[in-house]
Image 1 (cartoon, rainbow, N blue to C red):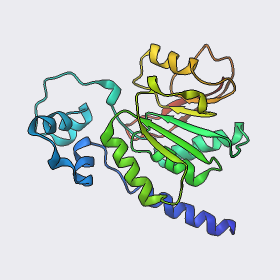
Image 2 (image 1 turned 90 degrees about the vertical axis):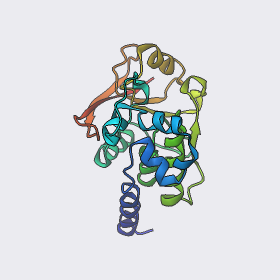
Image 3 (image 1 turned 30 degrees about the vertical axis):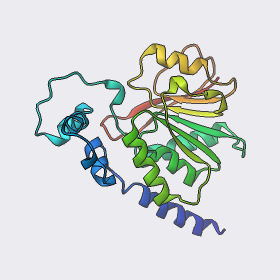
Length: 225
């Protein structure tokens, strides 16, 4: 395919991808048509799933404790482009590569990378079923022809990370033990992009920053295990 035509098609798909800007669990459920399936009690919990959900909905005074592991935001479009540039800088991608996004949320990083890179296989791991369902919807709308994108509802503690040659982890809310366990289970030689410094990994290729939806830029570390 002509390079200019491919660029136009890719940008068109990215435009389609980034029109999906739902963040709160309630808005996702309403969009998917499943909100009325929940009980009043479940609706209350879902409307206040994160602090951000409460701020969006405004009409509840929630007195419980938020689970910060479920806090959600996205790396912006130009930020994902920067991550792809770093992968291409440090790795010669082949058909055997598998990119795993830990905590993939609504799947935009995976779908963007599938459009713009030569990586063939992608796995998104997400523990929140509503976000995962939305990710699958977006995938079918934007990249229905791509047969090697998998979104899996699972705790990363129960996922076999040895299949990954490239791992992305926006671990802003992960505790130290969880981050250490994830790193220890990666295959030797795998490329590991994370938002926390990992001093046990001796090969740090680069530190860089990307734009994010929740405010300040996010610093990322590019390691090779």
